[in-house]
Amino acid sequence: MSKNSKDKAKALGANYEEIEDKKKIKKEVYEKELYKLQVELIKLQEWVKHEKLKVVVIFEGRDAAGKGGAINTITEVLNPRSCKVVALGVPTDKEKSQWYFQRYVAHLPAAGEIVLFDRSWYNRAGVEHVMGFCTEEEYLEFLRSCPEFERMLERSNIILIKYWFSVSDAEQEKRFLARNEDPVKRWKLSPMDIESRSKWVQYSMAKDTMFAHTDIKQAPWYVVHADDKKRARLNCIHHLLKQIPYKDLTPKPIEIPERKDDISYVRPPIADQTFVPDIY
Image (cartoon, rainbow, N blue to C red; front, top):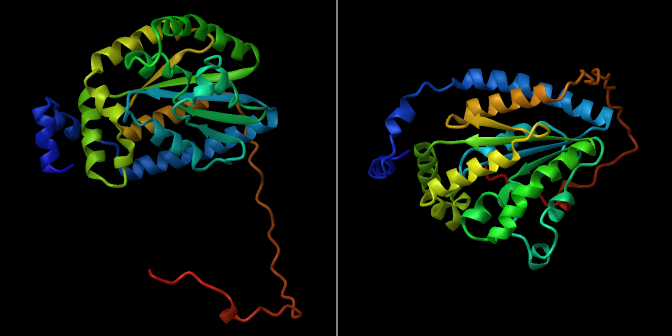
């Protein structure tokens, strides 16, 4: 983080020295532990496919809390044919006229699939409520119907796991400023993210109300301390693996035969093909 950003942070009251001085997990330790967990994730996926389980994992939390990074860390070693990420955009006019849960139901898993929601139907309890994108009646109806909807999923043999990534005010500010300085990450900042900074308390109150209504026995909320991204990812994956008992169905290594040359094959002239220039 640049000195200029730190100065901005101090002006906004963020205690960055406290965050940066906190002992971080070492890179080599993180990578070693992550590899072990990712091996287990592959075993879990094979078990889900074998047992034809239906798994939904919801990732919620404040902007820049690290939800996307955790999802990417989980999915980077898994087969995308049976592990899918759902990150829906702004609903269309048609979707706005539908039953609220309808567009999410369309993405629920079939047997043998894992679906990770990068934000979910809980948009109504958070951003839609705080920013005034839904009516008070729609918001209250969501709080009433959401627990019943999730109990219905549970009765349909869908395993629903819900994570809330908790990030401090200071750490969120730090990440916003870092994103603003990096052209590769700047797209992650939206006008909505900036406006949410002025509504920190309202979002906190909305989260508390959401938990009070939807932290149910069939689908409890699990809070992930996310100020340290690496620790948050490790802790989340470790916890996720504990939620579904599984057995190791990893295929045994196969014997790969040597390639046999066929003298009847003649490769076309290289000059007849168009190659990408070797710039690097």
